[in-house]
Amino acid sequence: MEKQTLPNATAVLVLGICSLVFGCFFVGLILGIIGIALSGRGRKLYRENPALYDGYSSLNAGFIMSIIGTVLGGLYTLYFIVVGGTALSILSNMNQQ
Image (cartoon, rainbow, N blue to C red; front, side, top):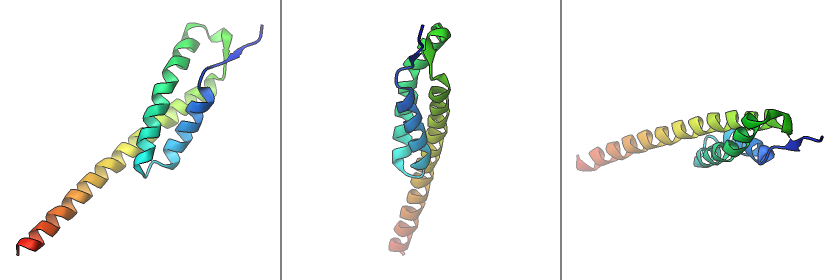
Protein backbone atom coordinates (compact mmCIF):
# COMPACT_ATOMS: atom_id res chain seq x y z
CA MET A 1 0.00 0.00 0.00
CA GLU A 2 1.48 3.29 -1.11
CA LYS A 3 1.22 6.32 1.14
CA GLN A 4 -0.48 9.44 -0.18
CA THR A 5 1.10 12.85 0.10
CA LEU A 6 -0.75 15.19 2.43
CA PRO A 7 -2.75 17.84 0.58
CA ASN A 8 -1.10 21.27 0.38
CA ALA A 9 2.08 20.08 2.16
CA THR A 10 4.37 21.67 -0.43
CA ALA A 11 2.25 24.81 -0.68
CA VAL A 12 2.31 25.29 3.10
CA LEU A 13 6.09 24.82 3.13
CA VAL A 14 6.57 27.40 0.37
CA LEU A 15 4.20 29.85 2.06
CA GLY A 16 6.02 29.39 5.37
CA ILE A 17 9.40 30.09 3.78
CA CYS A 18 8.05 33.12 1.91
CA SER A 19 6.41 34.48 5.07
CA LEU A 20 9.81 34.43 6.77
CA VAL A 21 11.61 35.97 3.80
CA PHE A 22 9.02 38.71 3.35
CA GLY A 23 8.38 39.10 7.08
CA CYS A 24 9.70 42.66 7.08
CA PHE A 25 6.95 43.63 4.66
CA PHE A 26 3.19 43.36 5.04
CA VAL A 27 3.26 40.45 2.59
CA GLY A 28 4.80 38.14 5.23
CA LEU A 29 1.80 38.58 7.50
CA ILE A 30 -0.64 37.66 4.73
CA LEU A 31 1.40 34.68 3.49
CA GLY A 32 1.76 33.36 7.03
CA ILE A 33 -1.98 33.51 7.64
CA ILE A 34 -2.66 31.70 4.35
CA GLY A 35 -0.08 29.03 5.24
CA ILE A 36 -1.66 28.45 8.64
CA ALA A 37 -5.12 28.19 7.09
CA LEU A 38 -4.00 25.72 4.41
CA SER A 39 -2.23 23.48 6.89
CA GLY A 40 -5.37 22.76 8.91
CA ARG A 41 -6.85 20.11 6.62
CA GLY A 42 -3.58 18.21 6.20
CA ARG A 43 -2.85 18.22 9.93
CA LYS A 44 -6.35 16.90 10.63
CA LEU A 45 -6.01 14.11 8.06
CA TYR A 46 -2.64 13.06 9.46
CA ARG A 47 -3.93 12.99 13.05
CA GLU A 48 -6.84 10.76 12.00
CA ASN A 49 -4.69 8.15 10.26
CA PRO A 50 -0.90 8.72 10.18
CA ALA A 51 -0.21 5.41 8.43
CA LEU A 52 -1.92 6.54 5.21
CA TYR A 53 -0.06 9.80 4.63
CA ASP A 54 3.45 10.94 3.90
CA GLY A 55 4.90 14.46 4.01
CA TYR A 56 3.89 15.47 7.51
CA SER A 57 7.37 16.80 8.27
CA SER A 58 7.22 19.35 5.45
CA LEU A 59 3.65 20.28 6.39
CA ASN A 60 4.62 20.76 10.02
CA ALA A 61 7.75 22.75 9.12
CA GLY A 62 5.69 25.01 6.88
CA PHE A 63 3.11 25.44 9.62
CA ILE A 64 5.76 26.45 12.16
CA MET A 65 7.43 28.84 9.72
CA SER A 66 4.03 30.35 8.89
CA ILE A 67 3.43 31.01 12.59
CA ILE A 68 6.85 32.65 12.93
CA GLY A 69 6.31 34.68 9.75
CA THR A 70 2.89 35.81 10.96
CA VAL A 71 4.32 36.94 14.29
CA LEU A 72 7.19 38.79 12.59
CA GLY A 73 4.80 40.38 10.09
CA GLY A 74 2.48 41.41 12.91
CA LEU A 75 5.35 42.92 14.90
CA TYR A 76 6.53 44.80 11.82
CA THR A 77 3.03 46.11 11.21
CA LEU A 78 2.75 47.24 14.83
CA TYR A 79 6.19 48.88 14.61
CA PHE A 80 5.17 50.66 11.39
CA ILE A 81 1.98 51.98 13.01
CA VAL A 82 3.83 53.22 16.13
CA VAL A 83 6.66 54.87 14.18
CA GLY A 84 4.24 56.35 11.66
CA GLY A 85 2.02 57.71 14.41
CA THR A 86 5.00 59.17 16.23
CA ALA A 87 6.28 60.82 13.06
CA LEU A 88 2.86 62.30 12.32
CA SER A 89 2.62 63.57 15.88
CA ILE A 90 6.02 65.24 15.65
CA LEU A 91 5.17 66.81 12.30
CA SER A 92 1.85 68.02 13.67
CA ASN A 93 3.56 69.64 16.67
CA MET A 94 6.14 71.30 14.41
CA ASN A 95 3.41 72.82 12.24
CA GLN A 96 1.58 74.24 15.27
CA GLN A 97 4.63 76.13 16.51
